[in-house]
Image 1: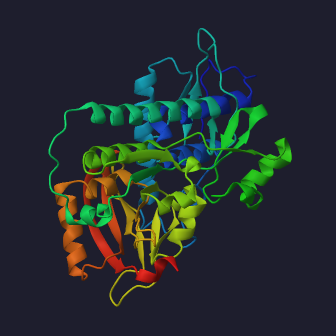
Image 2 (image 1 turned 90 degrees about the vertical axis):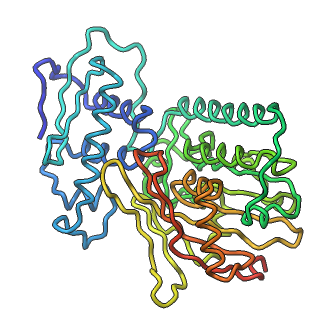
Length: 415
C-alpha cells in the first residue's frame, strides 16, 4: 500500500525518491544497522505490492525456504526494529525531510508520503543501487575520524601518569608472556568502487577483490559501468570500539602497542608481533585462511550462524543469532587463542559481528572469570577456540556474555 500526498508532484521521477531513500540509509541511524537498511530497501523496492510475511523472511532476511511465519516471529521482530529506526530518524531530522515513511502497527508494508520542501536542498547524493552502496565521501570521513579517535586515545594513555598495573590475568599472561610487541588489527572491509558514479559497493560474499566476477550483483553493475576498482577506506565503529577497549586494558601491560587497519597488515608481521584480529574473517584473506582450520567457523551473517565442524556428543552443531526483541539480540562469536608460532609469537582472534562484547569478555572481571572457568573445565590446553554468546541491547550495549562451547587447538596447527 502507498499513500501519496496531494503535495506530491505527479512528475516527480522515481530516481529522486530512490535518492531520498539512499539518504535515509546513509544516516548515522541506519549506517550501524545493515539488516535494517536491507529490510528498508526491500520494502521500498516492493512498495505498493502485496508482499507476504513469508516473502519478507526469504527475500529480505535470508531465511531458508522452510521458514514458517506461524512459528517464527523474526519478521515481525525485524519490522518492529525498522519501525523504531524510522521513528529515530524522523526525530533527528525534524519536519525537514520531504519523504515520510511509516509501517502501521500489525502490518509489514511500507507507506509513504512526499511533501515538496519549501526550499530545495542544496546537495543531493546520487542514486544508490540497492542497500550495499555507500557514498565514498562518507566513508573517507568516517575512517579519518575513527582513526583520529584511536590515535588520540593512545596518545592520552601514553601521556597519563604511570600507574602500577594489576597482575596479569591467566589468559593475558598466556598471550603476552613472551614479551613481544602487540599489534591490534582493525578490519577494513573490501568495497568495490565506481569512481565516475562516486559509489562504493560491498558484497558480503566476496572477501577478495579479484573474485568480484563471482558476485551476480557486482557483475551486473560491471556490465553497466565497467569493472570496479578496489576500495578499503572504511572501518567499522564496532571494531573500532573494541580496539579502544583493548588499548585501555593493555596500556602499561605491554611495552609496545600498535593499531593497524587490515588493508595495511602484512601477513609476515605475525612472526615478530603478538597479533589481535577483530571482526569477520572475510575482511582479510590471511584471516580467512586461518579460520578455515578451526573447529568453529562463521557460515553466515544477518542472521548470524556459527557452525561446529566436529561436535562432541551432546554438543550443538550450530549456534544461531537470536532476536529476542527489537532492542535485544543475542549474537554468537568466536574467541580463538592460537598456538605459538615457531618464532614465539601468538595470535588472538575475536570473530563475529559484536567484537566489542568479546573484547569486554577478555578485559572485564566477570568475563575473564568465565573464560578462566571454561578453560580449566576443559583441561587448560595451551591453545583453544571458544564460542561465546553475547546479548546486545540497542545495538551497542553489552548486556551479557557467556561461553557455550570450547575446543582445544592441536599444537601442529601451523604445520
